[in-house]
Length: 148
Image 1 (tube, rainbow, N blue to C red):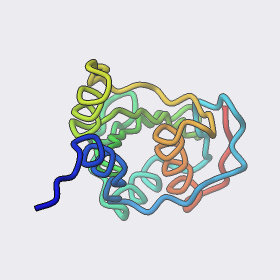
Image 2 (tube, one colour):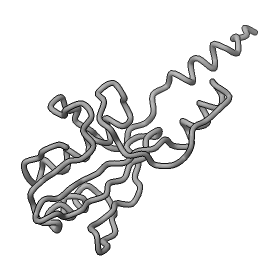
Image 3 (cartoon, rainbow, N blue to C red):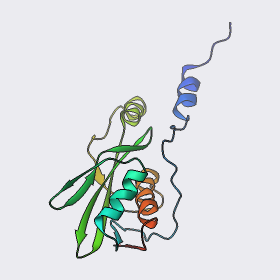
Image 4 (cartoon, one colour):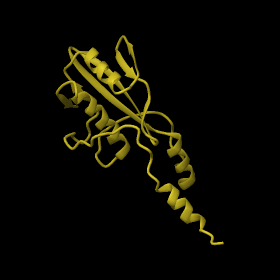
């Protein structure tokens, strides 16, 4: 019987990509450092787009907030939406899942927090970029987007 060294098994399973739940079209027109997406449509129109994409949300006096959803097995996301005089301000947040936290513990012996973090767009940061790109993808279906 042949034996496989433990480090090869760990390397193999660590390199397996996470299963994707949502198809995100990568963007290359978002300026580095962007934190918000602005679109000039009524709140109801954007909320309908969220519904169409299967994203749950709650409406409150200051706007709306989506329930947390998963982009892939490693990335959690949510959006806050606020209406300022007819312009919607969409702010994406991201976080990691338990699967990523377990890998961090395995490889580094430490893990990061479980809280959601506001996305600051940097093209080289894969997980936050995916969340921001997905918010832009949805907003683009209802109107012309701008970034702040």
